[in-house]
Figure (cartoon, rainbow, N blue to C red):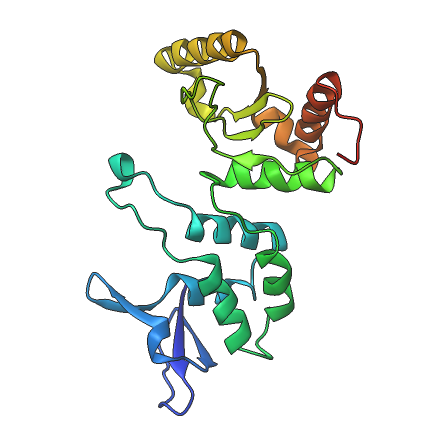
Length: 222
């Protein structure tokens, strides 16, 4: 099923397998992708607020504003900024899903590289734990820049790594072992999270992070 926006005032469109939405659409909310006019990432995000859950909308927002890795993705600019998302909210007062979008934008962060990282961060916050940083490199006292944990607490020297399905590959297992050795050498604690920790709204994952924080000296409220 395809969803199409017809600006207010344009002729009615009746096509099979097409859902037509009548909405206010500004010129700067349309771009061209492979010769086809489509809504911009920030406008698409706002429209998704009508149909996605709050967490899914945060995941979509994180994906929009993340800074891509040029060597992997061939681009170095985010799809849009948090300010762009906010501009859509401010512009379309009364739009369906607007209340959810206002909630979601408070939780959108730059730095999440995957939906799992975003959902893990949300679970950690909702458990009352301090919010972790995202993909920030470990820098030792001598200024040496080391690897970037998926999520981390520099104050407590804790790095949290989400392990996807590819972590079962032999080459990835070897890289994971080397990463664990680097954590140990730096005096950091590594918390490894996998799919099995993400059940029940990722509460097992948050509990595992809490144990590491408490062992590192966190007492709540920090």
